[in-house]
Length: 151
Image (cartoon, rainbow, N blue to C red; front, side, top):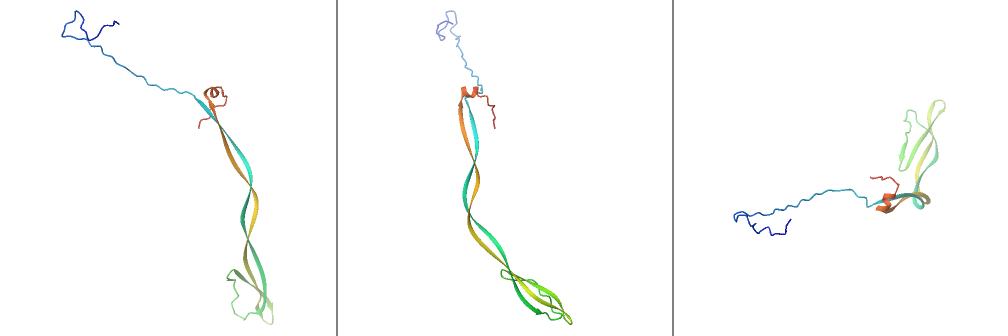
């Protein structure tokens, strides 16, 4: 190219015609993958014994035998199991031989549920995990033989 001014007419060009230079810029956009480093995560599980306090409840069944020894009247209904608050009353019937056969209420069993609570201390094993993260630079990442385990 020459260093002449594009706005000046050539010596032999006619004044009605002017040549203007036109320029155009173009852009190409692309992308590439570049490894700048890696991250290594090591997860460890630890078992830690801790002392915990809790309330334990126990239900104890107390059975009391109440002797009745009363003859039932002929034709009277047989006593049924009944409930008196927390106590269940279970009749115990026996056939006895008399000149005639009658039912005799021998006893009643009074069964009461008693709940108790007590504080106890015990040791339990708990597991806890920790994660150690190590960042590797691009040079270390390229030299690392560990396979890439992408999520």
